[in-house]
Length: 213
Ligand SMILES: Nc1ncnc2c1ncn2[C@@H]1O[C@H](COP(=O)(O)OP(=O)(O)OP(=O)(O)O)[C@@H](O)[C@H]1O
Ligand SMILES: O=C(O)c1ccc[n+]([C@@H]2O[C@H](COP(=O)([O-])O)[C@@H](O)[C@H]2O)c1
Image (cartoon, rainbow, N blue to C red; front, side):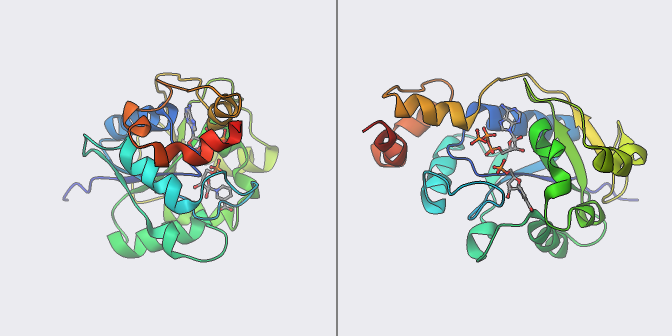
C-alpha cells in the first residue's frame, strides 16, 4: 500500500500570528511527517470580532511565513460567508484529498478543551484526526462528554484517514495573541514574540498599534 502523507491544518484567528503558532505548526509537521497549512478564520466562531480584518490578519500571516516553504497558508475560509466553522473547512479539504489521505486538525490544549461546543463537533472525527498541541498554562482536563467521546480514540501513532486523537508534545512557548494585543495597547513593541518579518511593513501592524492611541 502506498504511504499517504498526512495533511494537517492549524486554524486560528491569528490576531495576530505569533511564534507560539508557528513553532507549534513546525513541530507538528516534524512529529507527524505532515504537510501543514495555517488556515486563517474569516469570521471566527465563539469570540468577539478580531482587531484586524481577515485580509490584514492573512497578510501578516503571509509575511510571518516568508523565507520558508514548509508551512503554507490555506485561504479557503476567506471565501466563505458566515461563521468559519471548522467542520465545513474539513469537509472541503476531504473533498480535495479524497477518502484515504490522513487529515489532521491541529488544536492547542485550550481549543481542544472547548471542542464539544463547536458546530457539529462529532463530525470533525469523521473527517479528520485531531492532533492536540501542548500549550503552557492550559489544563489537560476535558469536560466529561468530550472525555467519554475521545477515550477510545487516543493513540500515539495515527492510522487511517480520520477518527483518532494524538497528543503532540512541543517546545512550550507561553505566547498568546491576547498578550500581544495588550502589549500594543500599552504602546509597546512585542518584538521576538512574532517573526521580525511582521515588523517590516508598518501597514501590517497598524490595526494593533492603533490600540495604543
Ligand atoms: N503558544 C501556543 N502553543 C500551542 N498552541 C497554541 C499557542 N498559541 C495558540 N495556539 C493554538 O493555535 C490555535 C489558534 O490560536 P489563536 O489564533 O486563537 O491564538 P491565541 O494566541 O490563543 O489567541 P487569543 O489570545 O486571541 O485567544 C488554537 O488551536 C490555539 O490553541
Ligand atoms: O467550528 C466551530 O464551531 C469552531 C468554534 C470555535 C473555534 N473554531 C476554530 O478553532 C480555531 C481556533 O479558534 P480561536 O477562536 O481560538 O482562534 C479557528 O480555526 C476557529 O475557526 C471552530
